[in-house]
Image 1 (spheres, rainbow, N blue to C red):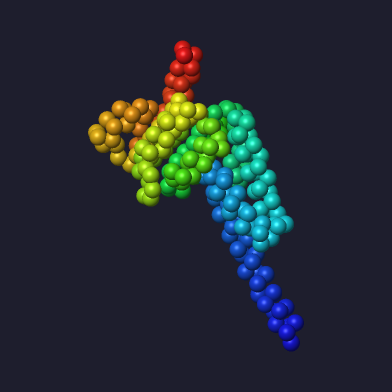
Image 2 (cartoon, one colour; image 1 turned 180 degrees about the horizontal axis):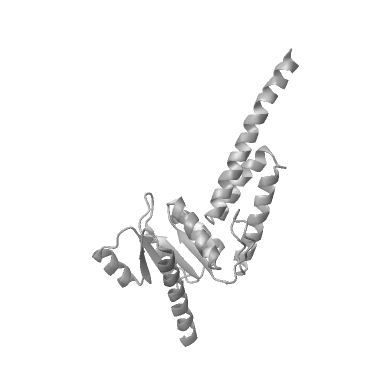
Length: 221
Protein backbone atom coordinates (compact mmCIF):
# COMPACT_ATOMS: atom_id res chain seq x y z
CA UNK A 1 0.00 0.00 0.00
CA UNK A 2 2.80 2.40 0.90
CA UNK A 3 4.46 1.77 -2.46
CA UNK A 4 1.21 2.47 -4.32
CA UNK A 5 0.84 5.85 -2.60
CA UNK A 6 4.41 6.83 -3.57
CA UNK A 7 3.82 5.85 -7.21
CA UNK A 8 0.58 7.84 -7.34
CA UNK A 9 2.28 10.92 -5.87
CA UNK A 10 5.08 10.64 -8.40
CA UNK A 11 2.56 10.38 -11.25
CA UNK A 12 0.82 13.54 -10.10
CA UNK A 13 4.12 15.37 -9.56
CA UNK A 14 5.49 14.64 -13.05
CA UNK A 15 3.14 16.88 -15.10
CA UNK A 16 3.40 19.58 -12.44
CA UNK A 17 7.19 19.45 -12.57
CA UNK A 18 7.15 19.57 -16.38
CA UNK A 19 4.85 22.60 -16.28
CA UNK A 20 7.30 24.36 -13.97
CA UNK A 21 10.22 23.45 -16.26
CA UNK A 22 8.37 24.85 -19.26
CA UNK A 23 7.47 28.00 -17.32
CA UNK A 24 11.09 28.62 -16.28
CA UNK A 25 12.34 27.98 -19.82
CA UNK A 26 9.74 30.30 -21.39
CA UNK A 27 10.58 33.02 -18.87
CA UNK A 28 14.30 32.59 -19.55
CA UNK A 29 13.59 32.97 -23.27
CA UNK A 30 11.68 36.20 -22.59
CA UNK A 31 14.64 37.50 -20.59
CA UNK A 32 17.01 36.53 -23.40
CA UNK A 33 14.89 38.53 -25.84
CA UNK A 34 15.37 41.51 -23.51
CA UNK A 35 19.14 40.81 -23.58
CA UNK A 36 19.04 40.26 -19.79
CA UNK A 37 21.48 37.37 -20.04
CA UNK A 38 22.39 36.89 -16.39
CA UNK A 39 18.73 36.88 -15.35
CA UNK A 40 17.98 34.41 -18.15
CA UNK A 41 20.75 32.08 -16.99
CA UNK A 42 19.55 32.24 -13.38
CA UNK A 43 15.99 31.40 -14.43
CA UNK A 44 17.21 28.61 -16.70
CA UNK A 45 19.12 27.10 -13.78
CA UNK A 46 15.77 26.57 -12.03
CA UNK A 47 14.58 24.58 -15.04
CA UNK A 48 17.71 22.44 -15.09
CA UNK A 49 17.36 21.76 -11.37
CA UNK A 50 14.02 20.09 -12.11
CA UNK A 51 14.87 18.45 -15.43
CA UNK A 52 18.54 18.54 -16.53
CA UNK A 53 17.89 17.03 -19.98
CA UNK A 54 15.04 19.29 -21.11
CA UNK A 55 16.02 19.95 -24.72
CA UNK A 56 14.54 23.46 -25.19
CA UNK A 57 16.42 24.59 -22.07
CA UNK A 58 19.64 23.03 -23.36
CA UNK A 59 19.26 24.84 -26.70
CA UNK A 60 18.57 28.14 -24.97
CA UNK A 61 21.59 27.66 -22.71
CA UNK A 62 23.74 27.13 -25.80
CA UNK A 63 22.40 30.34 -27.34
CA UNK A 64 23.11 32.29 -24.15
CA UNK A 65 26.66 30.92 -23.89
CA UNK A 66 27.46 31.78 -27.50
CA UNK A 67 25.90 35.24 -27.32
CA UNK A 68 27.61 36.20 -24.06
CA UNK A 69 30.94 34.92 -25.38
CA UNK A 70 30.51 37.08 -28.49
CA UNK A 71 29.63 40.15 -26.44
CA UNK A 72 32.52 39.64 -24.05
CA UNK A 73 34.93 39.54 -26.97
CA UNK A 74 33.26 42.64 -28.48
CA UNK A 75 32.55 40.52 -31.51
CA UNK A 76 29.32 40.56 -33.46
CA UNK A 77 26.29 39.40 -31.51
CA UNK A 78 24.13 36.53 -32.67
CA UNK A 79 20.65 36.88 -34.06
CA UNK A 80 17.80 37.32 -31.60
CA UNK A 81 16.07 34.38 -29.95
CA UNK A 82 13.32 32.81 -31.99
CA UNK A 83 13.32 35.29 -34.88
CA UNK A 84 14.05 32.57 -37.42
CA UNK A 85 15.99 34.95 -39.63
CA UNK A 86 19.41 33.43 -39.17
CA UNK A 87 20.93 36.89 -39.61
CA UNK A 88 23.99 37.90 -37.63
CA UNK A 89 25.07 41.36 -36.63
CA UNK A 90 27.74 43.16 -38.62
CA UNK A 91 28.84 45.76 -36.09
CA UNK A 92 31.09 45.35 -33.07
CA UNK A 93 29.48 47.98 -30.83
CA UNK A 94 27.68 46.74 -27.74
CA UNK A 95 24.89 48.88 -26.29
CA UNK A 96 23.46 48.63 -22.77
CA UNK A 97 19.77 49.51 -22.39
CA UNK A 98 18.38 50.10 -18.88
CA UNK A 99 14.61 50.31 -18.44
CA UNK A 100 12.13 48.80 -15.99
CA UNK A 101 9.55 48.33 -18.75
CA UNK A 102 10.14 44.85 -20.18
CA UNK A 103 8.32 45.75 -23.39
CA UNK A 104 10.79 48.55 -24.05
CA UNK A 105 13.76 46.29 -23.30
CA UNK A 106 12.44 43.66 -25.71
CA UNK A 107 11.73 46.19 -28.45
CA UNK A 108 15.07 47.96 -28.01
CA UNK A 109 17.06 44.72 -28.01
CA UNK A 110 15.25 43.58 -31.16
CA UNK A 111 15.89 46.92 -32.87
CA UNK A 112 19.57 46.99 -31.91
CA UNK A 113 20.11 43.46 -33.17
CA UNK A 114 18.27 44.23 -36.41
CA UNK A 115 20.63 47.19 -36.98
CA UNK A 116 23.65 45.03 -36.25
CA UNK A 117 24.51 46.03 -32.68
CA UNK A 118 25.21 43.79 -29.73
CA UNK A 119 22.53 44.33 -27.06
CA UNK A 120 22.65 44.01 -23.28
CA UNK A 121 19.58 44.77 -21.18
CA UNK A 122 18.99 45.62 -17.52
CA UNK A 123 15.80 46.35 -15.59
CA UNK A 124 17.26 48.72 -13.00
CA UNK A 125 20.32 50.16 -11.27
CA UNK A 126 21.69 46.98 -9.67
CA UNK A 127 21.29 44.86 -12.79
CA UNK A 128 22.89 47.63 -14.85
CA UNK A 129 25.93 47.67 -12.54
CA UNK A 130 26.26 43.89 -12.89
CA UNK A 131 26.07 44.22 -16.68
CA UNK A 132 28.67 47.01 -16.71
CA UNK A 133 31.00 44.89 -14.60
CA UNK A 134 30.66 41.98 -17.04
CA UNK A 135 30.59 43.87 -20.36
CA UNK A 136 32.09 47.17 -21.42
CA UNK A 137 29.45 48.69 -23.71
CA UNK A 138 30.18 51.35 -26.28
CA UNK A 139 27.06 53.31 -25.33
CA UNK A 140 24.48 53.34 -22.50
CA UNK A 141 20.79 54.14 -22.88
CA UNK A 142 18.91 54.48 -19.60
CA UNK A 143 15.55 55.75 -18.45
CA UNK A 144 15.72 58.65 -16.03
CA UNK A 145 13.59 57.31 -13.17
CA UNK A 146 13.18 53.82 -11.75
CA UNK A 147 10.27 52.99 -9.44
CA UNK A 148 12.55 51.50 -6.77
CA UNK A 149 16.08 52.26 -5.61
CA UNK A 150 18.60 54.59 -7.26
CA UNK A 151 17.50 56.54 -10.33
CA UNK A 152 19.05 57.02 -13.74
CA UNK A 153 21.11 60.00 -12.61
CA UNK A 154 22.76 57.78 -9.98
CA UNK A 155 23.69 55.31 -12.69
CA UNK A 156 25.12 58.12 -14.80
CA UNK A 157 27.24 59.40 -11.90
CA UNK A 158 28.40 55.86 -11.07
CA UNK A 159 29.58 55.43 -14.66
CA UNK A 160 31.30 58.82 -14.76
CA UNK A 161 33.21 58.04 -11.55
CA UNK A 162 34.41 54.68 -12.89
CA UNK A 163 37.81 55.10 -14.51
CA UNK A 164 37.27 52.35 -17.11
CA UNK A 165 33.75 53.42 -18.08
CA UNK A 166 33.69 57.19 -17.62
CA UNK A 167 33.99 58.07 -21.32
CA UNK A 168 31.08 55.91 -22.51
CA UNK A 169 28.36 58.02 -24.22
CA UNK A 170 25.14 58.15 -22.19
CA UNK A 171 21.62 58.70 -23.53
CA UNK A 172 18.50 59.16 -21.41
CA UNK A 173 15.00 57.86 -22.07
CA UNK A 174 12.19 59.91 -20.57
CA UNK A 175 8.41 60.04 -20.86
CA UNK A 176 8.62 63.82 -20.58
CA UNK A 177 11.70 66.04 -20.64
CA UNK A 178 11.21 69.10 -18.47
CA UNK A 179 13.34 72.23 -18.67
CA UNK A 180 14.85 71.44 -15.26
CA UNK A 181 15.66 67.88 -16.33
CA UNK A 182 17.29 69.11 -19.52
CA UNK A 183 19.40 71.70 -17.69
CA UNK A 184 20.50 69.23 -15.02
CA UNK A 185 21.39 66.61 -17.62
CA UNK A 186 23.35 69.01 -19.80
CA UNK A 187 25.27 70.36 -16.81
CA UNK A 188 26.28 66.83 -15.86
CA UNK A 189 27.28 66.02 -19.42
CA UNK A 190 24.47 63.72 -20.58
CA UNK A 191 24.83 63.30 -24.32
CA UNK A 192 21.17 63.33 -25.29
CA UNK A 193 17.54 62.80 -24.19
CA UNK A 194 15.16 60.56 -26.14
CA UNK A 195 11.45 61.00 -25.49
CA UNK A 196 9.06 58.05 -25.08
CA UNK A 197 7.17 56.54 -26.81
CA UNK A 198 10.24 55.56 -28.78
CA UNK A 199 10.57 56.15 -32.49
CA UNK A 200 12.96 53.57 -33.94
CA UNK A 201 14.50 55.94 -36.48
CA UNK A 202 15.01 58.69 -33.89
CA UNK A 203 16.64 56.23 -31.50
CA UNK A 204 18.99 54.88 -34.15
CA UNK A 205 19.89 58.38 -35.37
CA UNK A 206 20.77 59.37 -31.80
CA UNK A 207 22.85 56.23 -31.30
CA UNK A 208 24.79 56.63 -34.54
CA UNK A 209 25.39 60.32 -33.88
CA UNK A 210 26.78 59.64 -30.38
CA UNK A 211 29.01 56.82 -31.59
CA UNK A 212 30.34 58.97 -34.44
CA UNK A 213 31.01 61.83 -32.01
CA UNK A 214 32.84 59.45 -29.70
CA UNK A 215 35.03 58.22 -32.54
CA UNK A 216 35.96 61.80 -33.44
CA UNK A 217 36.90 62.48 -29.83
CA UNK A 218 39.23 59.48 -29.77
CA UNK A 219 40.89 60.56 -32.99
CA UNK A 220 41.59 64.05 -31.72
CA UNK A 221 42.62 62.93 -28.21
